[in-house]
Picture 1 (tube, helix red, strand yellow):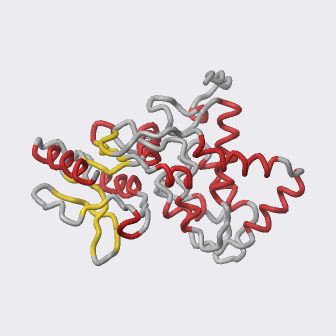
Picture 2 (picture 1 turned 60 degrees about the vertical axis):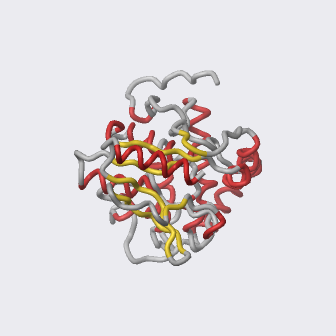
Picture 3 (picture 1 turned 90 degrees about the vertical axis):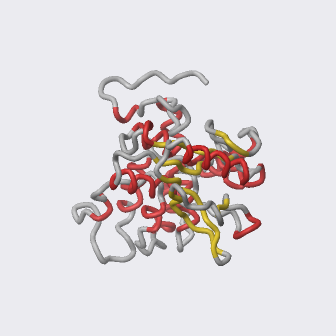
Length: 275
């Protein structure tokens, strides 16, 4: 699979279509993001598979936003799994990236990883390497978790989340790892909403402020869960906001490339599109 990806990237450089390619490189047994430039050998490039250092996943889209701000006239290639492509679609919609300045080189997730991630989109439309697998079974576990939470009455749910939020150390890891967090000024650092220096965080304001911002952005990549040192089930919280968006508006972030968020429109709520 890596050979097919390298062949595609080399062709993009040869045809002068990209100024750089944002991917992953293995060095000294570690995997990290790397910007490959024209004329630079693709030595060490990897896909983050478990043969090297587990399924290494990074918010490459977040790095791409920074690159695009610094070099707005350049076109960049980027390694993209299904959730990464969903993120790109969201960033295009939110005018954080120019779709004409981004070329995705897509790879499919293996079935066991898609299942573990409860993935709604195990392979991108810009697929270059890997097998297309269906998403149906991979999201079953997430739905069951949401269903179990919804069986609790309101007081028990509120108590559950208060206990979870009380563990927060305000490290901002969930924000910093999120590929869909791009604001130049973060509401979580606004003293009118969140007091500085206090632990535990303002409950429930801190996490509910972020959850509201994620309502039409979150692509369910799960990186926030992986980054949280306190093991707060943040993904479950964002799954709930995504479920509400789906039920009320028929909207799922990043699934349809050209779909607008209902939160960006004024007037009556749009009718839910039959699926």
